[in-house]
Structures are given as structure tokens and as C-alpha cells.
Image (tube, rainbow, N blue to C red):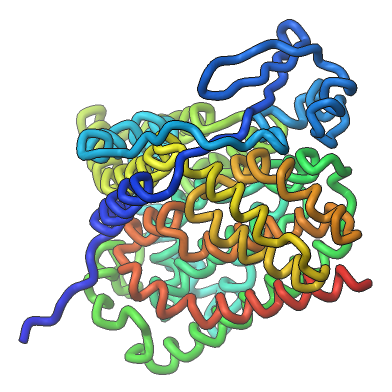
Length: 498
């Protein structure tokens, strides 16, 4: 009997899109009014499906609307997206998504994330140029010598650095650039590609989940809840250390098992395929790590340093990040005197290698398009907020954790989730005599937990780079996810009773 293969990431997303389209025929349509600040004329814009009106931008307007957020959070730019207005939910005419909408949704999704797709393609081009020079192979050879017998340091360093990026400024989509570079290094260290995938993806997600100062989750959620983002900071720092240590221990335990016996690898049946994919060669055929190749790798690494600095300090986003990688590729081409035609062919081939990943990102956004156009996200938020009525605070905060876990499927964006839900959810803490920072923590943890496996978020795109199936990722991740869920529940329960 022929073995049934798990469907590809693209098929999984298309099946999810069909499921969401069907939901729009079953779940009643509804919406909250939205409130946005217009800095050009210093007014609020209150909008819904019927239209929009302008209101005075002052604290009295916010108080009248029962929006318990200081006016300076809007005028300073801390809240830059439209928020939901509490108490304004209403059922509206249904907008079920039919066959035409289902077909067009992935295409609209690709258009909406064109900036991310361009970044991914240019990263592929840069990686191909660096690989063409032989710098990766020479650098990996040298690093293998330095780490001989201490390969676990690689796991600790990569996971910790990426987690620090996640907890500080939401390092997530940018991590796709690291897979083609780091996987050959992990393979040379006698680990499998799952270890590299875990260090990068788990590192970024545990950082975002246990965020300390991430402006796209912690800060915007705190602002939307009407509290200072430093409230609860020390507890979140402790949680981050505990969570990161747990993940590193879990990855090292798996990595050691694979190193001792490669057949213990979850992806052992793909070993040859993955080694070939990432140009893994026997290190005995060494390329001299000369000054030119050192300069190439230095420029390559500097591209990421400049990218991180730009995002953190210069308000850069995907377009500027793409420009950095493009300039890096051209500089390396000049330094290594790569023929113009060869440069273009190599760059285009590298970009083409990540085209499948780019489409997955677009397809995932297409699912969100269906939910937005079907007007069911606010309905789910309304019923979720009603679910916790009358609960004691210990049960309330854990119920909130799982509410946010479920909502994450429908609203995978951390900043989008914050501004849509926090004005509705955070006042519920007042009813059980809790500080609103506890709801912020439940949001962070619930959103983060599901994003480890959320097919409408980043995981399928990451798996597509490594050529690992979603089913194999679930096999690796589920035990760790259970552990992190227990840690999250204990943290939330203890902190509400302190």
C-alpha cells in the first residue's frame, strides 16, 4: 500500500482558506466601531462599515467613548493603528465569501505582503552570490574547527541572540534570511536541519512570546490597555529567562540524541536530500579562508547588523531592509569581480530558490483577507470577551490565555491583535480586581504559544525554506509546547495572587 504523504505547506494553507471561507457562511458577521487618530488635523476618526465621522481629539472624547486610554498615547504616535471601541459591537449584514472571493484571496494576500516577498527574494539572491564566492564553505570549515567538541555553544548562542532580538524588537520575518546560512553550519556540526530550524524559529518565537520591550507587542498592547509598558516588566524578564532556558535545554537534548545516533532524527529520511539542498560538502575539500572571503562574510554579516540597527533606530521596514541586502550583493560582486552576466544569473537563481517561500507568505495573508472581508473576526472577539464573565481571577486569567491562543489563528499579527482586542479585553481585568498588565501578559503568552504552530503565521514559510513537513515540525514541537503552556499557566496564576 502506498504511503500517504502529508500535504505541502501551500496545500495546507489552501485547505485552511476553504475552511475560513465556509466559516463566513456560518459565523454571524459583526463589527466594533474603530477609532483612529489623524495627526494632520489633530482629530479622531470614528469609523464602521457605514462610514466615518471626525471627533475632537481630547481626553473627554475618549472618556465619552469608554476608551480608557490616555490621550497622549495617540498624539505621541504610541498607538498608530485604529483601535476597537468598547461597547460598540453590532451584528451587520453577512458577507459570506464565495468561490470568487476564495480564488482572489491568495492573490490579494500576495499583493498585500509584496514588501515582505521582495525582501525574501533579495535575501535569496544575496545568499546565492555569497555562496558563489565560496565564502560560506570556507567559513563553515573554519568554524567547525573552532567548535570541535563544543558544538552545543552554537545552539546556545544562536537561540539566545535571536531570542533577544524577538523580545526587544519583534525579530520574526527577518529570521528567514538565516536559514540558508546557518543550516550548513549545523550540518557540519553533525546535527540535523531540525536543530537549526529550532534554534532560529523557536528562538524568535520565545522572544516574541515572552516579550519584554518589543514595541510591536508589549508596548502597543500596554498602550492600548491604557497602562505604562513598564508595568510588569520585571516579571516578564524573569519569565523570558525561564522560557529561553527551557527551550535551549529541549533543543540541546534533541540535538545530542541526533549527534549520537543520526537515525534518531525526526527528519532522518530527508538527510541526503537536505545535505544536497544546502550544498553540504565533505569538509576535507577545503577552500582557503583568505582575506577576500573574510571580507565577503564581513559584508554579509554587516548587512544584518545594519538591518537590525535600521529597524530598531531609524524606523526602517521591509523596503529599506531589502535595499541593504541589494547593496550588499552588489558590493560582494565588485569585490570578487564577478562577471555581470554571471552575477545576474546567480542572483536570479537564488531569488528563484525562495519563490515558493514567498508564495507561502502571500497565501497565509490570503487567509487573513478572507476573515477580514467576511467580517467574522470581531464576532469571535465579542463572544470571546463574554466567555470570561463572572470567573474568579485565577480561572479568569488562564481562560484569557486560551482565548488569546484561539484568536491568534484568526488574527496572527501581534500588533493587530493588540489594538483590536486590548481595548475590549483589558477592562475585563477591572471586574475581577486585577491590574491590566495581567491581560497584556495573557495576550503575549496566548499569541506566542499558538504562533509556534500557527499555519497562518510564519512557521509554514520557515519550513518551506528547510524543506521540512508541517507534520514533522508538530512531532518535534508539541512536547515543548506542552511544557511552555504549563509554564505560562503557572506564571499567570502565581502573578495574579502575588
